[in-house]
Every structure is written in structure tokens, then in C-alpha cells.
Image (cartoon, rainbow, N blue to C red; front, side, top):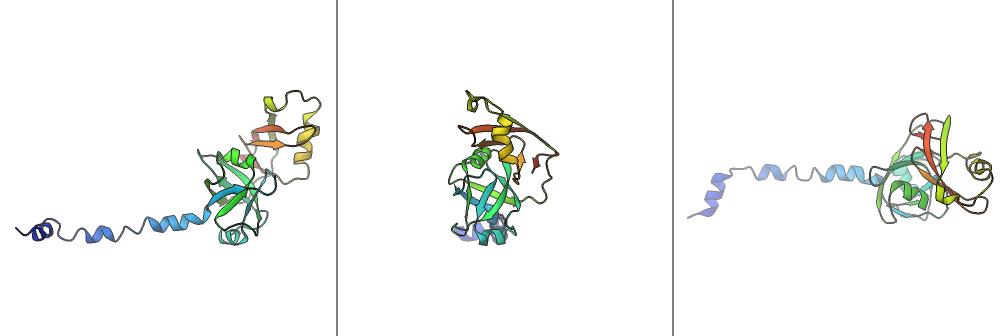
Length: 186
């Protein structure tokens, strides 16, 4: 019995055709991969800033001070300001602990970065302190923590984000419970 002849008779030329589209899935991955970066610890402790290499910024068509949307795990995202870091590998992104917590990522995780375009200026940002961080603190939280944090600062805020403010005697964590207009503001 000639098994090769039987195999040829049952499958005339079909195997040759599916082999051609097989490389197609790698095509879109290569297009998408420039935005996907590995998380590293930030050198500065700014809650509003992430750092990319200059080459990566050029590849993504970003400029110093641009707003970027960063997507993490569990459909979490936030808006930050991008700065260049010449000592950073092209496949990495630096962000501080506060940004990582908002994205639900850890060091070494992969996130994606996207240009955010124009973010509207906030007419109203509703912020509340977290209970366990204000135990024993007296005085006006606005004057001590929030006013210095937001005054003369270009800070993106996203509804649902947490941020840590160092001021007074110890750091206090706040949550953005509402912003107007939209989800992101500056």
C-alpha cells in the first residue's frame, strides 16, 4: 500500500495554502510592540511623570512634556507626563510606586504607552484623603498638602487614581473621586 499516494489523494493541495497566512499574526505584534515596555523604578519620585529613552520617544512620536495614556493590568490606565531619560534602555519605562499602584503593575511587568493628545484643563477635581493615612493629623489638609501639590504644577489627574503627597509631618494618600470634564484632566 502506498501511504504517500493516499495522503496526497485525501488532501490535494490544501496544506500549502494555510502555511502562507501563518506569518500574519507576527505582523500585527511587531506593529504593536513599540508601545509595550517593561516597568522600572523611577529615579525621581514624581507621581505625574514617567521616563522613556529619547529613541523610544522619537519612535512613538512623543515630545518632552507630552501627555501619555499608560495602560496597565486589569483594564487600569492613567495619564502622565513623559520625560526623556538618556540612561534608560529603549524597551523600558520608569515610573514611581504611585503610578505603578494605579496601573496595578509591579517592577518587571509589561505596560503599554499611547499618545494622549489634548487633555482638558480641570474645572473641578474632587479629592478625598484615605482614612488610615490621616490618623492623628490635625489642621487644614488643603493648605498643608493639596495646595502645594497642585499649585503651579502641571499635574494630570484621573478619576479613581490614588496619589501620595509628602508635606507636614508625614505623607498622606489621596484618591481622585471625581473630575470635570471627562475622565482625565490637568
